[in-house]
Amino acid sequence: RDVLSIPTLQQTLEELAEEVSESLRKLSCLGRTVTLKVRYQDFTTITRSHTSLRPTDATAVISGTALELLTRATEAGVRPIRLLGVSVSNLIGEDEPLQLWLDLPEAF
View 1 (tube, rainbow, N blue to C red):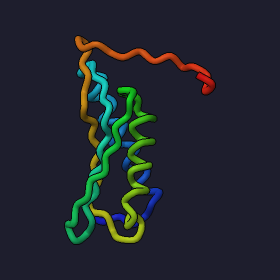
View 2 (cartoon, rainbow, N blue to C red):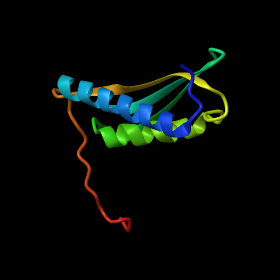
View 3 (cartoon, rainbow, N blue to C red):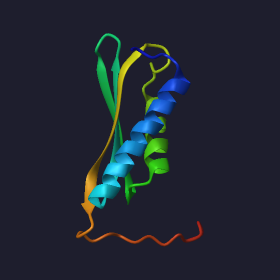
């Protein structure tokens, strides 16, 4: 069914992010690019992506990024949405080198 409610869309994105996170953990992978797919009632489809420097499999990070991308879909909440999708790409497997990050103060 088509959805117009922003809270319902947010709930759906959080559930999708959890599924993606579980899949990444099962595969022992991390991803850098989160992509949101939105299909409106008239079947117009848009995608929005964000690539981070730090790869992740964390549900909160994927969900937060997807929610931020939803705000870029300026017609969300105005036009009914028929389909939402969340994916993660730019994957890094457990056998690949991983850049380690130091959380240094902003002064550096």
